[in-house]
Length: 366
View 1 (cartoon, rainbow, N blue to C red):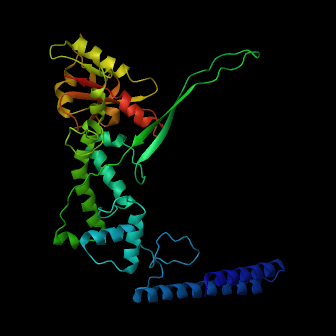
View 2 (view 1 turned 45 degrees about the vertical axis):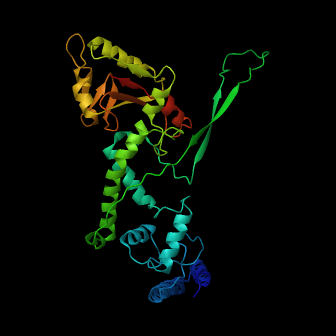
View 3 (view 1 turned 45 degrees about the horizontal axis):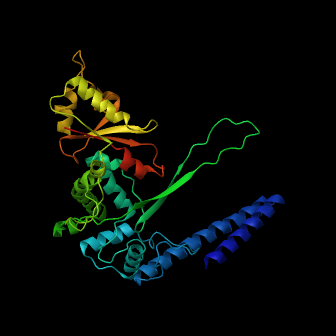
């Protein structure tokens, strides 16, 4: 029985049952409702029987897991890309339906042909969560699920907001437009899958992969976010990679966003210079300070006022982390020992976020 035929019969029986009930014929209405229940049961059994037959025949009836048609799909027919991905990693042979799913998913996502397999979105989310746990700075990096490179338009307006009388025309705003170009770079790591791992259940196997990838990729990605060298010039030999925040700021003429201090600076001078660095972040933007644990313990905690009280205090409301002059201090090992990196961000949807990251992040160098 086709789905459309089933729905028509069911609706007809329900209509008859309602009409009988309206006419005060409750007993006959109950009989019609019993027919509806019998029809539902018969259709359900028919679906299960067809699904079992398809499975036994290794049917390719459902070749697209994202099919939007109104045909009935039972749990036995559904294919999860995570399961197909796990079988691929284990080196197991994919049947026709699984191979079709694998091909369609990867062709719709990647731009290069030298990639092995696209990581499922659910698994990818778990990987990034693990990576952010290992490196705090990665929690501020927004994942963009975009195929290829991305160009974001930005605009700067001349503020003409003012008080006017009715006889005075409003001054037009001058608009300056620009673009932010985001490029993708390959970051790869090898993970050995032993015979014992292949015998693991799919869920446990994917958890193992998540943990291994997170550990291997997090350190390198966090370092690139902070210290990445960018696209090489003709005289450079490194591979193309993200341009790190510190790299960009230190390359600016006169380094206007960098505040330096010396080993002989007094506590008062150090506190003033750090205040100066934080003050460079415009109002309205949240500031975070990133530093290695050694920098926090050996440097920040050593800066005290004239009464010997530390400027860095334990914030018990946030799990025991530190704050300095009210600014959250985050442990981050992606930098060398000599840098403290305040971070500012307004909203996740701010279209100028990438510009702000590049222009407003500050470093304090020993």
